[in-house]
Image 1 (spheres, rainbow, N blue to C red):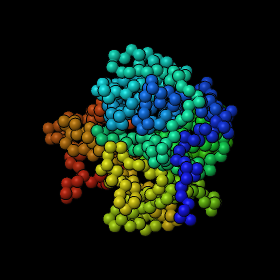
Image 2 (cartoon, rainbow, N blue to C red; image 1 turned 120 degrees about the vertical axis):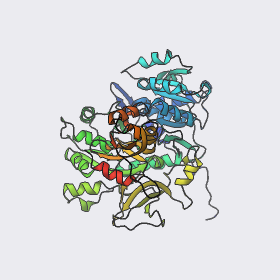
Image 3 (cartoon, one colour; image 1 turned 30 degrees about the vertical axis):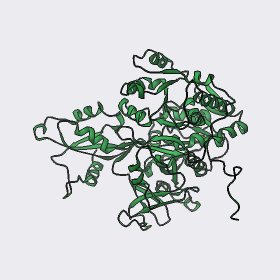
Length: 551
């Protein structure tokens, strides 16, 4: 046995990029992407991706293996294609949240050393402003993404007074490419494939680097979690810039799905597209489910739609109300650092006979590790040992498995702090383990608020509050919200000479000038002094309790 060693014939690097070749062969004439009046087949998508990859790696653009190429755009066909085309050129894919403000975006572009940015026409002004913060030698070149809804972005790019190297439109890049291009395969499956940022509004953003191996395992996880059949109809209500759509950008290719793209997510559009295209599957944050159940013109679905929700612990009532409309809700848990969902609430047949309320409570738990993931546990933060499986004893959630990131880009200290020598990845999230072995998240890490699926660092908001000359102390915590899951709530004490002259509206307006809209505190509570421990640390757990009681 010891003489039987790995051989090139049995050790090809794992990569999701091979899914596209397969899809073109099996599902070539089937629709791959639908958006407004545009429909592509899998053979067309395969050819378009190869052409873009060919141009990216050509001498005219000169994108080298391992260099970063960024994408700023919504859920449209070109953004989906770039999930394949960029890494097929050998480059590292970097999806950026278009909801960031210009300064935050500039931080991400500079930290990632992005060489090229594909930007949607609706985000062109944002990107141009972001580039104004960068020195000339650090400005990436630009390619404009367009569709049949708007072409004004091209004029905006061309007439920019900034020293920006505008290359072409996306279609122009594609038309110059070779459809027979032999895409760049990874040297080994540990090569970096994607760079995703967990936060882009700090001077030290966390850039999560995932390997081809990790992305492959996340995508396979995605298929197994749902038992997703061949040729499903998948509605893109989950942003592709959220951890590459929890790896479903690639997973849908493996099963020849019809991807229904949507530029703007709102209740009327979702219900219309579900009915028009006979949607079978969609992913959605709890806030999207809440939006659908509270839509005044909501209607009972004509056929069941499978929904996977994650991003924040969903209230049992949201699950119950969603299922009453015909959505079959599954629940999972993961992080940007795991490339997708690695824990899911696997349903047991013996739960079928339970009442709707009890079923919803069970479904609101995050669940058990996925089939291809190695281990998940909850450890006591003092002893480092597993907590009791009693559903009450809290600890930190830890993971071990092939989906875990390579590390944080340019942040060896942060990498070492989360990927420790005991072999676990420490999530920073607090949870419990139930007697049946199912995990439940009880609280997010102290510095993170999940608002509508967006991660908000409370320390970043606090930093802005402290720049207000009237503010003496500031602490930001999560306030439960029916629509958004959580919203930032600020507790501040004022300097003595400003005690009665600053209003809640003024503080919020101050934050609006320095933060993206979704990060601005919805509530500002003034206190004479914030509660502290004997060592002077602000007691945030008391503030969280106070926030829960606010109207």
